[in-house]
Amino acid sequence: MAPTCDDGIQNQDEVAVDCSRDSIYSDCESCCYNGIQDYDEEGVDCGGSNCAIPCGWVAVKGRILYEDIDNATNTTGIFNPVRYGNLYLRLCDSYPCTSPTHQALWTTDSMGNFNFMVPRSNFKSAFIRLGHEDDDDVYNFNYAVKIARDLDDCDETVWWHSASREIPPAGNIDFGELRIGRDANIDFTGYWQEETDAALCGYGSSGTINGGSGYFNIADAILYARQYADARRSDNDAIGYVDVQWPDDSDISHYSPCHEEIALLQESGFNDYTIIHEYGHYLQDAIGTNDDYWGSSDHNFCTHGKDEEFAWSEGFAEYFGTIVSHNYAALSNPMNLYTRLERPYCFEDNHNDCCEWPGKESEATVAAVLWDLADDPTFTGSVSESHDTISGKETLIFNIFDDELDNGDSIAADAPDLCEFIEQGLNCRASSSAEKDAFWYIWKHFNVICSTGCDN
Image (cartoon, rainbow, N blue to C red):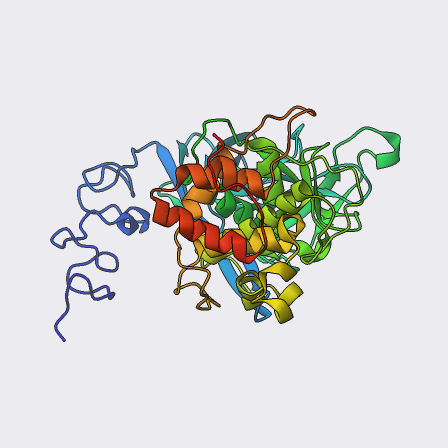
């Protein structure tokens, strides 16, 4: 075939792949990183009509990826972008870099790309740092989450840095793809250090991290959950950052309302459902109403009989962890998550007998009711059910959670339950009597006894 301007080959009069003054790609960015003074550039890769980089400045670009694991298939070696991640460009007066003299803060885009522009000055080298060992607080991985390590009841800050790159006398720097390994260093080396001065914490102790991509998987899973919530809000109270401890020395992964932080076990670093489930509890605390349950917190999906507020708290988090995983292909979403909400196994033998269900005091009931309101035949694991004739109510569910179920954050505030969700939200927001009847068939199927009116 004859050469073209978009054939992926450097040919014709192109100075880079598909990059020519006469082609439709005459403003392509690669021409500003080719080390040649071409077109009408005023210097090497700077100035002129094609390069937005003014001479006297250095453009530094690249892309950051972290290694993920698909728990459903146990597949490793998957690399995802570090989306909207905070990073530092550190600049040095020598090469290789031994002591940075300046730094600039930047944020990656939705594909993990970054692009700095700094004065050329006398800088000789640069490297990328994720996190900062001198921070007084734990590292803000993105706008949704701060994460630290905690294996001794004291926070340990974490950070990573790339190898330094020489800044040429003229031209710019393209770091290319920089990868963070799961349990081995690839393009970044990781470190940790105690940040507290308490004697029991061993202040000043530090060490290295092999890989550490689990931190970035946690940050990305929570960012997806935050984006899901942001897109479905009906209130304006702030969500803010959530603090995460990983790995934590707790017995179980959990959310602590007292400390307003999520603690995750080592094995939960790549379990997107667990991460988002616990973030659902944080949202109950931040923009809804958290249940301060004083009994034993031991529970599982089939637990019932504690009280209806505990059941709502756990059932909503169960639903939230599953629905967010369903919505974003980058999140691990094993089939059993969907099937246990579509046809909860706890009472499978009596699935068609509503009176055998324990009602609103069951975590499984709450999760199943919410799932039936949201799912449609295209959902993974969807089953045709006579009681479920409605779908697409994800936004409605979150609206009610965010608004009608926000009873305040004081100790005296009444935590919500499934009937409050129905009586103060679902029934009141029904668009017609037919839709209200469709709602009723779902919660009646699970032996949930609530008022059919609107208590608004």
